[in-house]
Length: 369
Image (cartoon, rainbow, N blue to C red; front, side, top):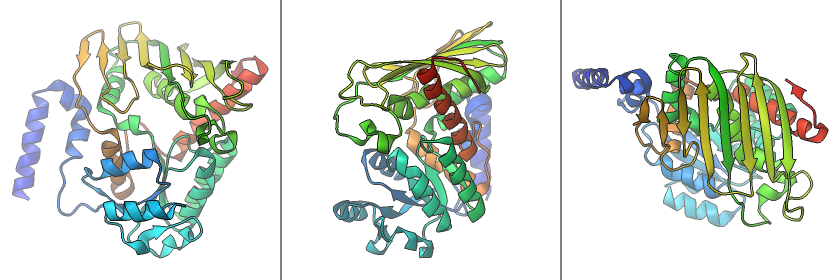
């Protein structure tokens, strides 16, 4: 105990000498201090696609998370991943026998990383099995589904978290800290630009039945969610416009490009762009009457870069998913409260706005939230 106490004291003194670390990132640094007594979150990864691979690699660097089970409809993946991450065959499941995971005492939570339209069903099954759920965003493809997921987890006595990795990213948290302390004054405007030129036209992201939409559900949600945590309010109205240049690739119900505007009770406004037809779009800009914050890149996997009217933000460069998973372990195992919520209610708020954006596109009218 003396060694750990001395180490914590050193951390405290070091952070006290650097105001930025002390004020904005002390909780992040202290989360890295691991004692032998801290429990480890044992996770089953459900859906072994590209992003699951990124998560799995990130977990190898986690202090408090371990992969203990795998779920996939592809036997070859279960075999390959099982060997790579030391998961025994008895803890490898397909979608037919998944429900038996309730008998596996080596699994605390299921991380659902399947296509959007499957989140609802897979979350309900995981909750029924008595496991906590971490669900990738968007949490579901409708408000109705989102509510049912929250209710199912509540009935089962398990927690539902959503994979909002940016809610734990150091540069993002520093901007939020500065805003909360009044560094930018009264917030007036936010701009969020998120997009990329999508490739394979046969992929599930361009299939409405699996994706639930198009660019807004996949990449635009970053600008939408970002507008809320950057401004620090919930929007009260939305307007939106859609542009489609390729009706073959982007079929009915799969949006190519959507511009949307949000209004907040304080009078602040947000202007956002979501697209599958332009690269090099990854920027947040927050403007107040006393200053500004700019992040570019703002949500990508690589280092997030930020600056304000006071200069560059020199935050630690981290693997987003590693920090996310360790912080989620603290939420699920210790009851830690994150700076920005990542629970089911947070996911539901985004779904309500997404539905309003699609309604605004279809009607051409301002939608009151």
